Amino acid sequence: MSPSAKWHRSKEGLTKHFELFVMKKETGNAYTELNDPMRQRQVFEDQAKAKAAGDDEAMFMDGNDSPGAWLPPTAGWSMGIDRITMFLTDSSNVKEVLLFPAMKPEDKETVATTDKPESTTVGASV
Image (cartoon, helix red, strand yellow):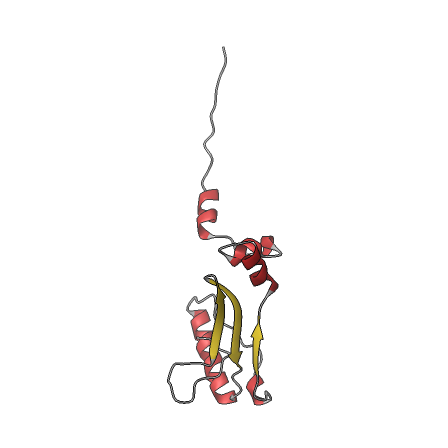
């Protein structure tokens, strides 16, 4: 679920959120912003618990203020340059087109293979 998206009025567990896919790739993200401060605080508390339990994608809320307390009804749509580049270069993963690849997290498989010691051959000539 999208923690910043407004919940559906009558369908439990459903949010007003959609993603645009082109040729099996996510290219856009859109939702109606959650602006109920009570629900927003509950969502962020749930996200904090998920983050503490190890969920890397959980959002973090800093401070004691709920943005929903001052937010008017809002909706938006975004399409990042990374998604456009991914589409134009026929990349299957957004990590392949990140602008600053040194800042992206390393894959666990890559780390596991690079941590292994390399074999060394010792030779002698007579």
